[in-house]
Structure formats: structure tokens, C-alpha cells
Length: 300
Ligand SMILES: NC(=O)c1ccc[n+]([C@@H]2O[C@H](COP(=O)([O-])OP(=O)(O)OC[C@H]3O[C@@H](n4cnc5c(N)ncnc54)[C@H](OP(=O)(O)O)[C@@H]3O)[C@@H](O)[C@H]2O)c1
Image (cartoon, rainbow, N blue to C red; front, side, top):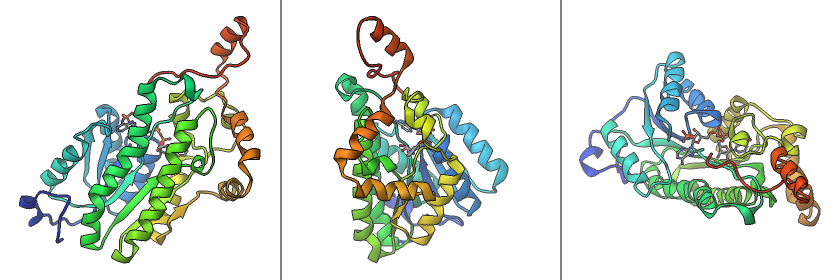
């Protein structure tokens, strides 16, 4: 390997590895863990990043039980200001350059935007918007120099439409889709791939963490497994696709979201996304309120 903008100079000369290494943010559970399993099956060593060390260790053990790869875990809040330094130090310790970066870690927010705590919204923007941008800006120059590797960004179908009651989350994914597609065009000539994945609902803890399990989209829209999304994501990346919408129904949905006017779509999204929290609805009904919306269940 040559040219190592993402590694300190003293490590660049001996950064020789037999297998490529992939960084998976949010790799301890859900979609991130499923992608990590798939990449391990394709011969990648892994650097898994999430906050909870115990969940990371469990994830690493499950991967190593199935695949003969090295799995390193970094317990890190990716919204921390020194996140890039922490990851650089870990890569330098391993003597590795990142071959694939999977920007997967993300949180949602369910409820009235106007009633959300400012801290909650700041955390969402920091993790879903700022972090993937910082990681890409930091790691893409090295990939371009090496003319190898690339980025898989996990966005959402929600990035194609405004989402009342998940307003900040949907907006954050719109940013990620736009940034990814633009960046893919900028780096294509240098042999670097950027693929953005826009899944529909997936059965993970994500929805319960933001208190959205009673929203109608959870009951009425079909949900896929993390493994299914992971297969689409990795296969799409290998094919060099810029955008991947996993599954036929989601593809139809993505086309509809792009074609139908927002004056029609947005009220439908509001109806699907209203969190309909029973306790709050009961309390508000009791107090004469009309809606069970608003509020959060803390962080997630
Ligand atoms: N589930 C869906 O229906 C769905 C649909 C479309 C798109 N997506 C997107 O897919 C991605 C993964 O979602 P998922 O359903 O797999 O979610 P999940 O099961 O809740 O997993 C989230 C992962 O992110 C990590 N994480 C959260 N906050 C973090 C932070 N501040 N720093 C570092 N790591 C953090 C979590 O670990 P810790 O909590 O230990 O940090 C966990 O590993 C997200 O970007 C989400 O927006 C999900």
C-alpha cells in the first residue's frame, strides 16, 4: 500500500496486511452486524465501532465463530469531537488502511419536532449527518491515493420524502443520499466506490428505541431482515451501484416517492409515522388533548 493520508507517517511504511479491513460503524447489532458478517464471509478483517463494549464483544465473538478473520472492536461514541483521532490511533496500532467504510450507525427520533429536546436533535444530526461526512472526508483521500476501496452509506427510503413525526430523521437521510451520490460522481475516476443504501423498514430495535413501535408503518408496511438488507448493500457495492434500494416493493416505493407530489405524500407519511403512543394518548385524552404524539423515550 502506498500513500496513507489516514495513517500517521510512521505507520504508513509497514501497513501491509494480508486481508483488507472494513470499518463498520454501529457494527454491534442490527444492519451493521449483518453487513459485518457478510464482509467477513468475503475475507475482510473488521473494525467494529459502537458505544456499548459488551454488545461489541458479543458481535465480534459471533463473527469469529463463523469466519476466520480478525475482528477489532472500538467502544466509541462517534459524535465525540476526537472520534477521528481515536479511529486513526486504532488503525495505526493495527498498521492498516481502511479498505471499506460502512457508515451505518444512526438513531431516529419519533414525535413532534417542536416538542423534541434540543439535545436529542443535536445528537441525531451529529450522528446521522456530521459523523458520516467527517468519516468520508477523512478516509476518501487515502482511498483515492490507493485507487482502491470505497464507502457504503446506510440511508433510508425516508430520505426521499419529508417525514412528519420523524422529521429530523428523514431530513438527515436526505442529506446522506445527496452527499453520497455527489461524492460517488467525484471519486469514480479514481477507482473508489460510494454506494448509498435506502432500505424500507427493517426488523431491528431501531424503532422501539425511538418509541415508534405503535406507528402504523410498523403494522402495515412489510419489514425485511437485517440480513436481507446486508446482502443488497454489499452486492450493490460490489457491482459499483451508486444507489441501492433493497427489495422490489421498496423499489416501487422509491419510484412512487420520487414521482408523487409532496402535497399528496406528506399527509400519508404523517398518518403512517404518527407514533400513537398509548400512554400519552390516554393522558392527553384525559386532559382533553386530541393526539398521542410528541415526546421521546430518551436516548436511544
Ligand atoms: N431499522 C430500520 O427500519 C432502518 C431502515 C432504514 C434505514 N435504517 C438505518 O440503518 C442504520 C442501522 O439501523 P439499525 O436498524 O441496525 O439500528 P440499531 O439496531 O438501533 O443499531 C444501531 C447501531 O448504531 C450504534 N450507535 C448508536 N449510536 C451510536 C453512537 N453515538 N456512536 C457509535 N455507535 C452508535 C449502536 O450501538 P450502541 O448503541 O452501543 O452505540 C448500534 O450498533 C441506521 O443508520 C438507520 O437509520 C434503519
